[in-house]
Length: 395
Image (cartoon, rainbow, N blue to C red):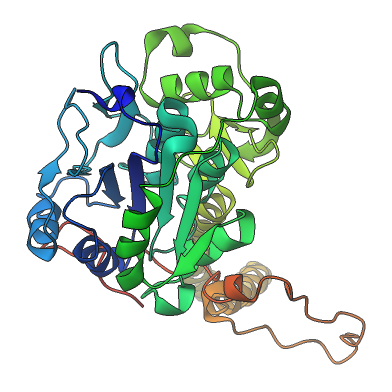
């Protein structure tokens, strides 16, 4: 009997994690009941070309069978399916029963597999029957996908940021999504066992979904782009509004597809970026440009020294003086760039204000109504563990 023939309970659980997430997912899996009446799909950011041992790690952690996802694999209750490296994991409604789909589509939030595509595909296929879970991780992959799960009537669960090794992803989800449950990783497994047996709420009407920006046709189109389906890429139709930003992956125009959900962008060929992902890519681009400028300026300084020395040896005093001025200008410009490079935004160190700068009228802003979301939104790095092919270490 397929999942579609069963009572409409919460029979699909989707889980997303990144840095520090293997430990969190292991604790969650250990708490899942052996008779869980739901299928479970897990995405943890993976190194593209390494072999992942995550399935065997999770099978040792709990009592449920764990399988590495394969193309067209049917979804079964009481089974955990794990994304594999360099492929997005999607849920497909299928002609007979829901199945898994693996696609090497454009990266989302600079990751493949990414969390958002799984969550969106699950929300489209299962509607209110989905439970979305966000665990430890850097930046904010999964926030937009969890918003879609919630928007289409599903349940949103987030690991307590204070319990997460890297709290950015849980904190981002709390800041952007009306989350139903916040608790520790150890307690989420038992919570999911209870929630899976609760009847699912009715799905919002298509008109209501369209007003909020997650209409079925838009989700279909977005997932078609992720899956590299020709019919979606050959169509000139796009959704959203063109922005001033360019895609860090391919240089194309980014379209603002935010709607009423979290800020996010997608380019013509499908690369998708959350606000934090785009900011991180911009930071890397700016830093690379400054290092290139510093190298060019130091080359200019060295060349100016040689030209000045040659001019002086040939008795060309005016030329030597002119080139010396160019060297001094290059020195000053290089010093200014080194000063900028020392200002790392992730460190939280602020530049010293000038003596005449008035800081009294610029108070710090705080999201007082969202204390749980205050910790861990500074854009931590997303380290990758070589042995598992997954993110396990926190900074």
